[in-house]
Image (cartoon, rainbow, N blue to C red; front, side):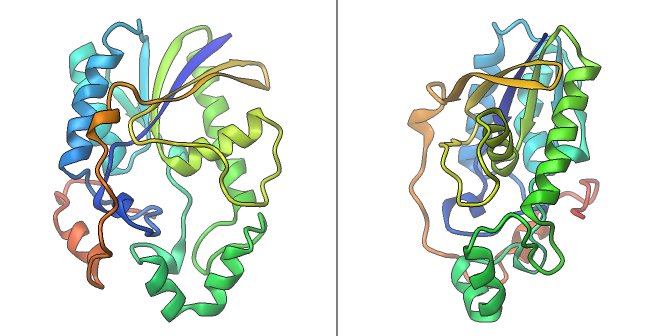
Length: 231
């Protein structure tokens, strides 16, 4: 039996509005960095034996303070990346509706087998996520592991554990930097606790007005050249 503490990354600027973030490699904003620092304090007494994170910058930045404090390397895993949204990535909902109205309308039906052009369907995403999570559990069998990942990944885990369909919009709360505890035994995934953000609740910032077009390019320009590029 393995216990995983799944954690959504800290806040980015694209989290503050209705944007498709996907796999573009944007950094945490100031609030996200503060959330990462609080997370390190929260995990101090968790008796963790390993850390794993998505290989995108926002998850690596979230994991870094805890990794340093606990002297645990955060192993990057591309299987834990957010869903790939293809043409939509880095754009606001309004921009997508203006540029790709038919594709946006199709996405809004929330059909699990629909893939945005250049992206992956929920069916494909779900298969990748479940395989990655179970692989982490198998590699660290019998241990307690922190896994820093993305909101969409957590949604797939929630649906799997609760035997919910893949069609339809997200139904569970997934706060930035919150703790979500799972127990995995064989193929069974059991949720022990969900959405615990008591350590960062006072840091939440309100939604922002939509930034100007080209926000994705501006954010990516601020990423260090050594960071991995998104698929």
